[in-house]
Amino acid sequence: MKLPFNFYAVRAIYVYEMSRTRRTLLQSVVSPVISTSLYFIVFGSAIGTRITQIEGVTYGAFIVPGLIMLMLLTQSTMNASFGIYFPRFVGTIYEVLSAPVSPLEIVLGYVGAAAVKSIILGVIIMATSWLFVPIHIIHPFWMVAFLVLTSLAFSLFGFILGLWADSFEKLQAVPLLIITPLTFLGGTFYSTSVLPPPWRTAVLFNPLVYLISGFRWSFFGIADVNVGLSLAATLAFLAICMAIVWWFFKTGYRLKN
Amino acid sequence: MTAAISITNLSKTYASGFQALKDVSLDIRHGEIFALLGPNGAGKTTLINIVCGIVQPTSGTVKVDGHDILSDYRATRALIGLVPQELTTDAFETPPATMRLSRGLFGKPPDPAHIEKVLRDLSLWDKRDSRIITLSGGMKRRVLIAKALAHEPQILFLDEPTAGVDVELRQDMWQLVRELRASGVTIILTTHYIEEAEEMADRVGVINKGELIIVEDKAELMRKLGRKQMTLELREPLDTIPPALAGHKLTLANGGKELIYTYDTKAEHTGITALLDELQQAGIRFKDLQTTQSSLEDIFVGLVRQGQ
Image 1 (cartoon, chains in turn orange, red):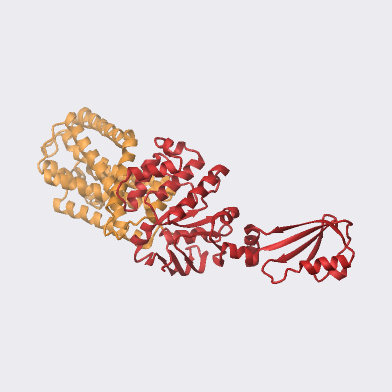
Image 2 (image 1 turned 120 degrees about the horizontal axis):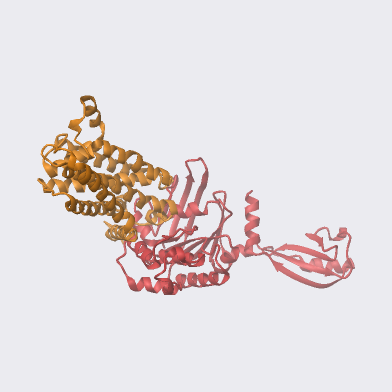
């Protein structure tokens, strides 16, 4: 029997990955929500009340998009990387490799599940933030677009990480030592416009500045960089990740050797 | 009739430079149980992994039911089920959940009735709510078989299926394999237990250092390569074999109390009659005699040693 598209495989991987999330609800959902709430309490409510408004937005509200983005980037990367690394680590990847599934279907299953988890998490964190600060979203369509595109792009990035990593240490190192610092330095808690000129230029080499800026623009209409540039950077990152994944499957790198 | 699996000039060299398979050609027929024997590192698992799509071949072609495994991988893989050598299971899932994943991966719609049947056949139904990590080694092995059968494959690879399982479970698995074959499933088995191949296989292939040394019908292989020994228990021990008997393949054992004659079953004349005549003429008398036939294991060891 010829299968032009193995829908059942995509669904099976997706369901399996989502059931892993349900199994690890504390780690997958509760923990990031609590961490973000603490950020709101400390930076938003406690310290934020002593900080003046940034371009007409209270500090507590200003950090909401950055914090959602922080969680989105780290959780997308960690979820997707673990999803594919664990079967490689324990050896159950043999089943995926021996099944009549195309690389596209494998990616749709794993990355789709990781991205959906991140989007759900992003929405939960956004709802949590409403408990602390009043928020009005000026461009809801673009907010959703940035949320979905970023989740997808960083789930793909996580998938690449999960294929590349050959130890749990490497798997943890990238989100903790690269993504988190870059997100913090990329304007989660501040506007890059407050930086002195040389630093203001330097941060433009941090790709996460564009994502955070674009997402914040969709909330408040204020941005550190042009929103078109933010969208282009997000799409470019997505395209680069897709190309790398395609190369991994074409060559069998870390999978079939 | 198209072979279930047709392998032509298959070679595999890993990135490290290790050549795991050297120009292997082999046809496996529909509905047979084929046992692939070989020492550790001989290339058995590499061969299986290439057919299943887990390892990329360096050169050569493999067709499954007439379909190329590379250009038509969806058709070939949908036909195959694989029970791997290692106990690699989804530790935190239940047997039905991991079977549902397997079935979906192979493009089959959910079928709770089939999953229940397989679990019952493998005596796993009572463990349906248990996490796999809590199951014994033998149970985990059954879960792997259940996963391989989840999508109702036409060809089943069993890579060392009874490694580390107890005798009772081994018998159960042999019975299951026979039932699968009776239902038309082609089975390819690799094993270290020669008795397993001897018990179940229709044909046997021996692989060593990446080369397929021989492929033969099991009974024919045992007939061709099987050697028999006749042991004569002597009335009087001998110090040496008398020169008159030097023309026979004789050895002394048990302090000269036993005379052992080795002969090929494939030979037209076994030479037993002539030997007995000459023993009588030489005045050597015996009080008992027995014959033993070499097992498939002896044949296998002999072939592998020849290859070295």
